Image 1 (cartoon, each protein chain N blue to C red):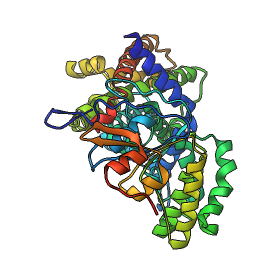
Image 2: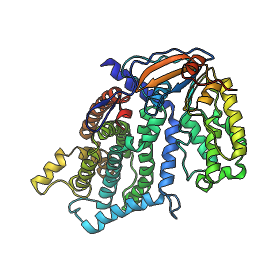
Image 3: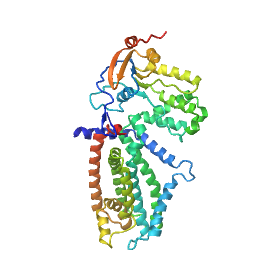
Image 4: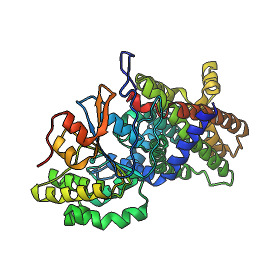
Length: 214
Length: 261
């Protein structure tokens, strides 16, 4: 719930109830402003519901804004530490993941130079490598993320698929129906902050006349 | 009411567990502010010295004050810390919007980040202060421990002040301008470079300005070897009151802050 400058109250989500179990891959659909990102943020714990409750069992990680917290004056290595700390990792976890992150990002010696010297693609590779170097039980995503040049994108795609396979539960907000069809077994549709549908993905796609992936 | 205080304590406990986050971010903030400068954070020290020297050399209002340089340097150290903390607090959550709306870090992390940043800055200023005090002939005495205790008390109250001002500043964006003006006036209305006595107005200002006591608990033991028990008691009572208000506000608003940004 948010109060606008005029004092009126905006209710971003209302009457949304659902339950997910281990193995579920939920696709969140709805038009822009329907409440998908808000729901993800409620599930992650950034927003606390003003009414009702959220019961989440398991280690939850989110891939929302992967550039969050990056500082352009600090080196790539320092940014990995800072981002790790913000993610709630301790120093031993950061040190443990450091070399793998650097290796995956393909930054080589650039890792010790300030982020501001990186090209856009390099910065995106670093952000992607840090953000996806986690091992969540519940993974929340606002759009499927990818980064860098075509070669790195193929690598990123594999990493995302591997991450999705390992996670117990995935909640993915996306407008890409093909991706949702390929990834999700359930669909939750939001309309103006209200739950319009929560059903098996196959049923939802059939009801909307969207053919299966050939 | 109990739930409100429990919420506040759980946020503080979670924030303190994440001390590496706020310590690292505070160090980065200081570094970023002086990046690419020749002198780096030494500018904090030079800025402080410039203020002190201006008041000592130009104003020369220290008639009747023994060891005026020490009087001004200690007073200015405490004042710059307090005024820096209060001024920065008013926009704290607005400045941290991207992290607040993108992560689930406890509010205490942002509060401690500013506390830490203010302490690091004051550390540089304290070097200048110590140099002036020693240069002016004041010798280190055991009574300085009272000043140390006073500094610890001020530091202990700092997060509470930040919580109150930051929450108020989030709901009342105009507050930052009010505070800016109050702090500018406070520089002259607080006995940093003037002493009580003379006009009645000045004596009243000395007595009723709450900042006076926070300056004097640090300054009196160094200047006169006095144990400022009364002033310490006033500051301690103020500290407890401020903390109770801060805990209430933190417990009540910590989850609502995000909706106002």
